[in-house]
Image (cartoon, rainbow, N blue to C red; front, side, top):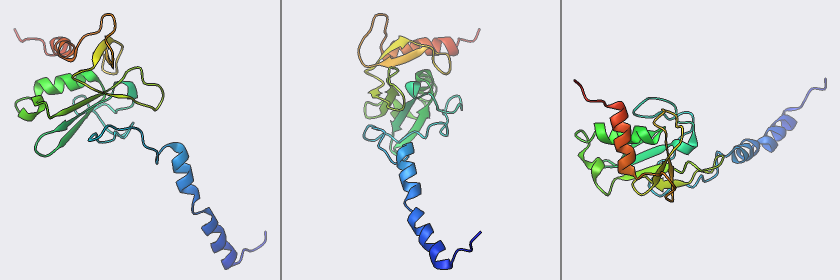
Length: 165
């Protein structure tokens, strides 16, 4: 095998320098995923739900909460986990019930990597198998059998936080 001269070696490395950036752009690392203003991007398969500690991987059911004096961010893998967090943490974070607190949920009809984000309070929830088995998925428009956010949250809390006897 022919021995490469130092100058040839350095020139060949310089020619390959743009390759990692191009590969990252093709893979999606550099593209805008359409995050709503104020929403912190979710690192798919790396961020975990603050309620169940499960990795956030199914983009159709992800949710996020942002607000308070410190602009706290909490991420969820299921709309039901968001509902439980609101129920369980209202005393610790009194600001979570304020209208200024942002609540986002993914539209369950999103396809592939393109997620459509909805305001969780105005979204409608349909019966759809979800990562934690709360079985609600968010949609933008009312559908037969869909419920509002408050009703979805009541169902989830009643299912999980059964009264003690």
